[in-house]
Image (cartoon, rainbow, N blue to C red):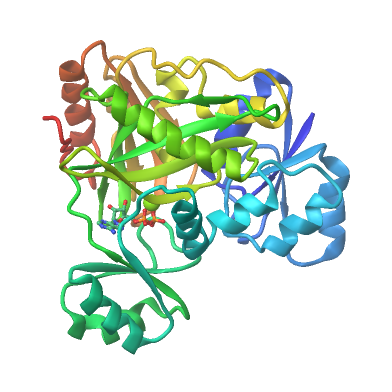
Length: 371
Ligand SMILES: Nc1ncnc2c1ncn2[C@@H]1O[C@H](COP(=O)(O)OP(=O)(O)O)[C@@H](O)[C@H]1O
Ligand SMILES: [Mg+2]
């Protein structure tokens, strides 16, 4: 089976690493001009039609690791090869307005929000919702890019200028207890399996730590998250891995933040920490194979390596530390690698996380809600 992947970054690289034992081959179609997968065959797509024909001729089915793609490109591919998840999933998940509309339709609670297309509308929305609010470009944002926190309506004009996008979504700022995510996988036959939820620590809009299973995970909370993501999977007739990011509030409730139609950074712990990784399960799902067990082997924490590589040898000196490097060059805010740490208890795990963070020059101190 030759799998075509739209996008050629580290997520594609890790999909390929999970697929080689299944005798999968990989052809990546990069639309950014900066592929970093460093594995499989990479076609840098530059609107020259024969390149798309080459790609289609090589692959049996197509998936993606990056959702900021023209929907028309995915639709064109869908006319020739099966695409999982479908172009409809990518259309909804690449646009925050579409995503929120689907959450609303399915009764999944979200922070209060408004859509605006002008600086004056942004200011009015900030007044109506009550500051602070978060303004986000409706498309293209990631890792906190294309966003601004507005603390006073008078800051709206400046925020509008800095973001520089024709349509923004403005959300009430959530005073959350913690950020969490749920990852689920739906097979071609509609079967769904759920990973244990992760607690995610973001600093400046970028993920730094994901810990799963959360030590104080209430069954009712996991069940609610499972219901929300199942509703999304079914509504989109989805095949593959879907991720839903949520805020947990003081009363234990969950508010949906955003979703990603792909394997996700908050699921990287599953490579070493779960019976079946999110990458293997995505490949199983899209090929119509039985889904693997999602249970955690042990409490696990993923530590992102961002900007600078740090002392890799020292990191590997930590017991049960697994370093996954992406073979990219150092640059501020760039995701270069992650470390998966495993320990039999959450207390022992936290000690390893602190030891690992101390070996990474840019890492903020790890702080979890349950400490
Ligand atoms: N409404 C909000 N209230 C509080 N914090 C928010 C809100 N929206 C986003 N954030 C913070 O910014 C981070 C990035 O925002 P997100 O919408 O997930 O965009 P991205 O696509 O960049 O991940 C979130 O993980 C969270 O820490
Ligand atoms: Mg996010």
